[in-house]
Amino acid sequence: MAGTWTSERFPQFEQSIRRLTDEHRELTDEPLHLAINYLPQNRNQQHLYLLEVIGGLGQGINPERDLFEVTFAASPEFPMAPNEELHLLLTNPAELEVALREGWPLAQEVVDAIRAGDYSVMHEDDVGRRDLAMLRELSYSDCQPRNEEGIESAALDFHLKSNPERWPYSEV
Image (cartoon, rainbow, N blue to C red; front, top):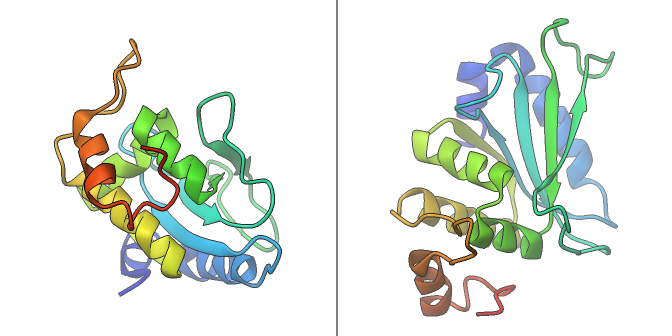
């Protein structure tokens, strides 16, 4: 069930996260394809983390080679304790695929959380299901991201080449 992990791990935030996700679903110029609430293994465990894959205009690839992240403190709409923050990671389907192929740090963080079972799918549409399938497939495989010399993972390339209909943004 969507959101079960969220209600078990962060019951005090379930309604706020669900409300935020529902508000983002209503945006027509940037449709929400996938929203995943997750807990990274190597970051502050008191913080909340939400990955959103969105569509619309501006489907570029970040030249800094990492996903866009913005951090929010407590607000009347999203009450939190002083030591808690919401980390919102935003990407688009094409950028997510590049991030996974190249092993961008924040993308790998999401894959690791999925591998550990520390996540909850808050929303997915048809595009989001493809992206989620890619994330899950990588979390269950032995493939590694691109290393520092730029050598791509043979396993990821195999996944993309053997299932081109599942990864419509791939250039392989």
